Length: 632
Image (tube, rainbow, N blue to C red):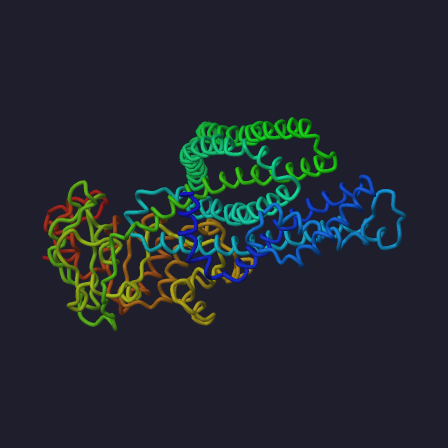
């Protein structure tokens, strides 16, 4: 019950969006349960009509007489027992349908032939229509709810800060989006549908059993509560193993994802067999938990059937002892088989809800995570960039020691700032702080005198364009990749941006030009081509602040020259922050900041720093860059 409550509480905001079809699904599910009772009633009716006709006719006359006496006496309905009421209803139905149904030892007429031929097909058709309607409507609602939850999970993940992505693997996040929402979909589509159909079936069949013989009903159901014992035990086992199963599958998916993303390294170092071994080992562990779950589920139905068989045996013993009519006993046993079937289905429903409960538990944990970088309660709009960017005693740490330590500098609008330093000196962290991917541990970053933590995030990042060493293109067309830089970009703007980035010619040479799909991560293109498309994306954004993070570090000399030409054009009339390991790319910077262990150790122009003989000079010497001799 706790799983059902958790799922309904989580799913209620989504259920309300599709309340009409969901409600209709419930209504049709109820009628499906009623149809099972009607089918059982039809069997009972026909079996009793196969007996002695005189006996049946006598029962019919008695029923008519009882109905007349009821009207005359005007006996209070509330004073009658449920069994007596059901007997009277059954007798009245028998009187109503008697002319339309065949009777043993009675001559057949066209009405009886028609009724006998169409009784069960009509009941089966009604049952089938109700089952189809409730199943389809529940599936329709479940699929849309699952898609809505998927979207919300996707959106939620994108609201979280970069530190969240450093703590969770891509495989784990994909599992939250696909597997957990899939478990919820199965629960709503299959579990919730059965949760509506089967209880209504049980109620209708229970009324039918009482109508046939209330004593046999009490005897048969005396062993019913025993079925709860294996259901509860197995549900606990499934919940426990479900957590371990999810962890194992996420691990296996992570191995596959890493192997595919690093396929060049895998092939270069001949790691295919090693990766396959890890994949198999992780899969075996996942399979172990799955098989244990299957084993538990497979034990459930035989356990329930075994316990129910005690009820069958008790019914047969009592029937022999009390000399119960064969027709009554036959119809009762048929009804009893139908009655116990929903309980077996409900045991499977419990499994669906247990698995969905685990998924909801993980999803709720995700939804409760708050981003470490939050937008201000009343953010300030950033209309434009007119004066300067200023770092004021900015310090930053990931938690394992300082990455930046009291960094201060001012970059005026239109200025060009270079960042140099060894790996781990804090250059990329400084860029991350400017984009507000993280917030400083202490100190402030201001643009035009306004602290960026008070600005609307969308406004801040709209004024920034990033071209980084990690060239990320999406698995879509060239035009769409460029258009990601500006929402609603026109075809003309896309082509213009490509021309500015010196990318138009090679794009036109592609099989479908701008409509050529680039494949995953754009690997169909060379590094220089991918980088120029990324630069075109920055061009179309037309942001006043351009951030270059090792933009040419991974390129060969020819590609670097082509890309650097595009970058120089992009940097015109913009404020530039350039991180570079290759110091020659900083020659055009107005000022250069040298970072060492998160602190500014040197600051000045390119030639000035070369001539100073400090850290920058040593770094330049290792790249065969030396001060130019001064004229005499």
